[in-house]
Image 1 (tube, rainbow, N blue to C red):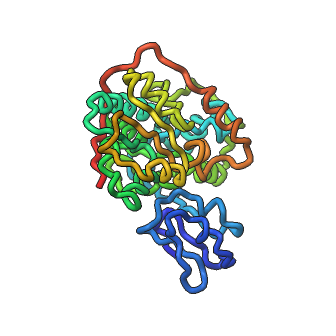
Image 2: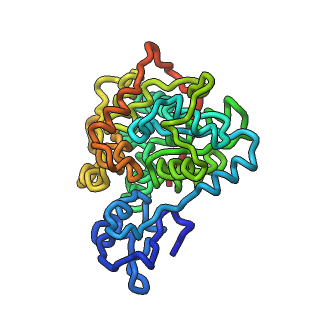
Length: 342
């Protein structure tokens, strides 16, 4: 068992059905001592094996204690909350923020703020048109898939850190480099991203982990009493809240002033992404194409750690209800995380 990697197998629970082996597009699961075992160097942490395992033997590394340690070690720690939160918790944002602060966090900020910065920077990159094709860097599972399985396309990944990384840098610029940042979202691959970029993100938790933490501390978000004015810090996000929905990033790029003749394509799921690039020769293209690539079908709203009991259309609707548009979008990002993918 490799409990250090974000996904591992509880061997006592594995029933040797081989379902995860058959359904892993990366062939990143092997049979070891009669049980299925994840191969970390081949895995992209998309979480598909976790979803299909009938005995729930595939587990996600629990980082609650690591997050608690960050709260103990640093004076101020902020939560970077993924915009898909609205599709998971059935309570007001004021109650959710209050519940999170009860755990000891200084404040809660929307990862969508970082998404907005990424879209502004990507719009600038597309305007140079130095490449014929560009692949988004927002999804860490897609980035790892390209690096491992389609390495010839790595040079086409936009050289920008993800919204979570960009948001962490934004928070550190505002509140100081000594703060802690804990990302919370529906994504397992974000744990890899946090592990590789500890200078920006201390810990990455899933929505399920945060819910478990609430339960451990006897906090019920829907029942907490809001006794003071609470809101997202340092400010509310706007168009960046579109990101969890397939096509959302492209929508923000268009809103940011991307030229009409640049083709913005949305692709979600690993098989669809692979098919979209098959037989492509970028050097022969007669147009500029940007691919908003997401590992989860339908986008992050359908991440492996979503609320499985809620209909997908309601989840997406709940997320879209939080989006507020601003009249003027800056032409220059406040912060940029320059990232070279190899």
